[in-house]
Length: 110
Image (cartoon, rainbow, N blue to C red; front, side, top):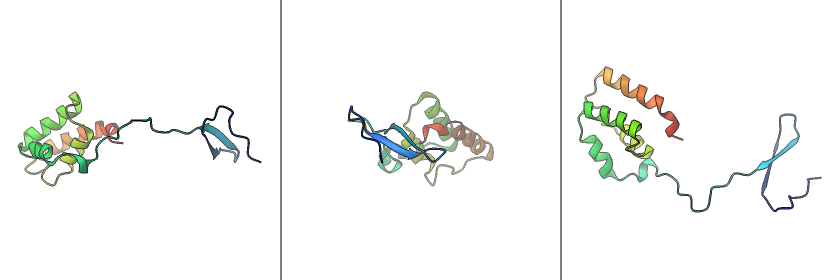
């Protein structure tokens, strides 16, 4: 027999616990009025074009500054870094440095 709903009307999620018993916990819901971050497809192409117009050394500096100062949104960083020409004319050393910068900041991409 399932337990009765809470008296305060809160929504409760039930799931099987470690030993097969049901556990109760609050269900996480997005806040009213919350706006989702734009995806890479929603980034204006003009913003990506500005990054692509830079030479490879400048793109490397832009990537580092975008993470350090928060000058760009994660969606713009992803859209620019996943562009076909982002690694064009890039040296191995610069590419390795950029990979380290991206890996160090992976927590921004959820």
